[in-house]
Image 1 (cartoon, rainbow, N blue to C red):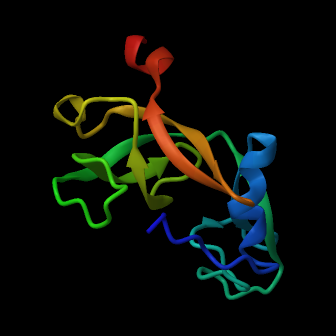
Image 2 (tube, rainbow, N blue to C red):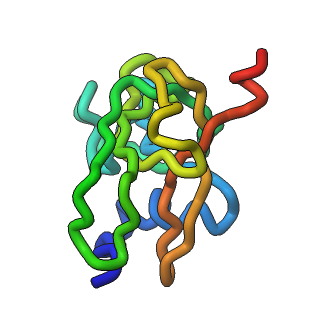
Length: 137
C-alpha cells in the first residue's frame, strides 16, 4: 500500500503542488501578514478570510523528532524520522514532515534543514534534508 495522498482542494492545492516549481507555499493572511499551516480558508490569528499562498524559503530547524522503527506498510523503509520543523520566516510556524538523507542517529534538535520535494502522482511532498550550508556556518 503506497503513501496515502492528500485530497487536493482550492485551499490546499498550492501547498501540495508548489513543489512542481520548487516552492514551499504557506498560507499568509493579507490583513495581518500571519503565516500559518495547515492551509485554511481563514486566518487563525485575526479571522480574516483574505488568505492565500505565499512562497517561503523552505529553510528551518528541527524542533522535535522521533525515529520510527515500525514498518506500517511493506513498502515503508525503517527506520525513518518524523520531525516537527519550525520555518525560518516566523517563530511558531511549524509543521510535521520527514527528514530524509541523514542517518536517524545524526538528527539533532536545532539541526538546520531545508525543504526537498518528492513527487508522487500530482502531489509534491515537502520532506526535509540537512541544510549543509547552514550547518557549516
